[in-house]
Each structure stands twice: as C-alpha cells, then as structure tokens.
Length: 460
Image (cartoon, rainbow, N blue to C red):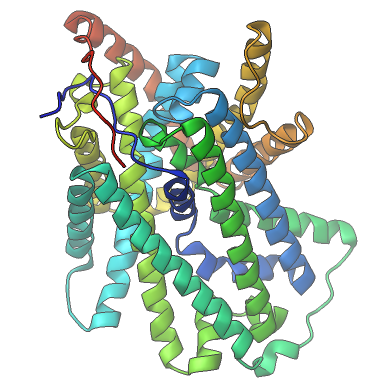
C-alpha cells in the first residue's frame, strides 16, 4: 500500500488531452444556450453580436496565454493559488482559496446541480423534489471523484465529449434549418457610433462570463505529466476549441432567427432546434442544458479540491484537508469538504441572488494573475533563470490588455450592483483574521511530518 497522509504526493496521470478537456469543461456550462440573445438585446445588430463574441474570445485567449506562461514558469500544485502565493503573499493566496470554497466554486456547483434538477422532471416525467435531486447529484459526483483522479477525470471527459457532440448537433441543426419568418425582420438602427460602442462594451460582460473558467485546469498541475508542457498546450487547445464552438453557435442563431428574432427570445438554442425539429426541439435543448450543467458540475468537483489540498500543505488551512488516500492519492478530505460546502449552499435559500454578483471575485484574481507575469519575469531575469517553454505572445501589450479587461469587468460589476457586491468585499475582509488564525493554529500544532522519501512508480 502506498503511504498516505498530508505530505504524500499526488499521482501524475493526466496528459495534454486531459488538460484540454478539463479546460473546456470548466468553461462550457449553460450560458452559451442563452447568452447570444442577451448580447443581441443590447447591441441589436448582427455584425455587432459576432464582433462582441470575437472580442470576448480574444480576451479568453489572452487569459489562456497568461495562465499558460504562469504554468510554464511555476508548475506548482494549486495553480492560481500558488501563483498568488509566490507573486505576492500567502495571505493573497489564502483569500483566493477562501473565496473559492465559500463562493466561487461551491456556489457554481450548487447552481449547476439545481439547474439540472429543474430540467429533470420535464425530461423524465418523474416527480422528484429538485433540492433532494440536486443533493443526490452532488453526493454521487463527490463520491466518484474520491475514487481516484483517473476515475474523476474519465467522468468529466465523458460529459465533456457529450457536451461537444450536443453543441455540434445544435450547430448542424442551425445550418440545416430554414430561417424563421422573423429572420429577415428589420432592426431599428442604433444611434451614434459612440453609443453602439458603449452597448458593445456593456454586452462584453455577459460574453466574458460565458468564456471564463479556463483557469480551473491549473488546479490540477500536481496531477499532470510534464505540467510545463501539457498544461500550456491544454490551456490553448481547450480555449481555442471553445471559441470556435461559441462563434459557430452565434452564427447559426443569427442565420435562423436573425438579429430581431434573437433579440426577442430568452432561449435562442431552443428556437433554433424548434425551427428544424418542431416541438421536439424544446425538449431536446432542455436535455442538452441538463447535460451541460452535469458536465460543468463534474469539472468543478474534480479540480477545485486541489486548491484546498495545497492550502493545507502550506499550513494555512486545516491539516486534515491535506491528507491523501494511501492508494488512490487523491485529496479525499478536500473533495468531501468541497462537496459538503456545495450541499450546504444548495440548502441556503436566497443564495442565487448573491451568486449573480460574485463572479467579480474571479476577475480580481485574473487581474492579479496578469500582474504576476510581470513579477515573475522580473524575478527570473534577476536570477538568470532559463526562458520557459511558453511565453505570452506580444508581451507586455497583450498582458496589459488582459489586465485592463479583467479590471473593467470588476469595476462594471461593482458599479452596477454595489450593495450586492459588498458581500464579496466582506469575504475578503474576513479572510484576513481567518488567515492569521490558521497561522497561529499551525504554530501550536508544530511542523508537519516529513514526506515519504521514496516516490511511487507512476502509471498512466
């Protein structure tokens, strides 16, 4: 039996394909099935809709470039958590993990589980309480990921491949269907060019939300083979694949519905399938959305516990969270903690109102990730470190552009809903005494026992 415990090492079983599918799974949720209409309602013009999604894809690729270089320079367990720790201070890294557990990841998982539960009864005809079904789904996915990284990764891959097939089917239906009667309806011309640009800027918020999620693959650094190569490649391939799929979805929505039709529906994907399949299209898209939410849920349960495991190893979280199962070498306690947090949030009435605004947390750390590139480059030059296998193209201009985009998302969110966004500010404030509390606790407990000196043979 392999030695377990808080200092045992994670098994490196995942390759570039795994990283790419994890990236795609972290991005693609249910948003792409609705957000094209959200954008159309703001900008009105078909070409402007596509331009915004192209711009959003460019920002996502810039983010992938940033995280790819970070992974190449600092291939450490925990991904973005580790970048925050080394670029700035452990308290910044703790803030990231703290908000990840209490808001970002757990909240996203709870929302995904409840979304799936909401579609289950109409699809199957089985009358099950949505909350109980959501709790059951969270429990099952948590259990599967406790069995091992390969088992959890395989489950995530199955759902990701099914999601790709489903979206590809939607795209094919859009090219096969005849345009609806309203596809050629005229749209009132926008005002001045300046107002159209402003509308496009506002609509970018929804687009960037739909594209976010590529960073979660960096949490799996400790379980990737040759992470300095596999993670950058997987990041770029995964984001590029999502950009292509998202653009094609918008193309077929505009082809079948036209700008006017796209503006006047909240379910554009359903309308596209309805144009080809009739009433069966609405039921089919419900199945696709349910499938997509399950895939997103599987991805989040797979990746996020690795951050809490890294926090425990650093001595700024409960020591037990860093324990690895002696055989599977997965952070079982961290996975169980993530599942429990998601279950509690699922039971927390009113959480969905808060969830609309906590996305600003992610973009705070996206901005810090861009700054970390400048920090690490300066340090590595001073130490005369070798050039990493991947660097951000057109740095510093491209990195600065991503930084500006991340800051713009945060500012826009706080301006639009300041009182609700105060919840996230409160979490940052509370994180400071919590961090020092864990530091004091670790000092009282003493140093962690030494890690095993013999590494197991790796397979995969």
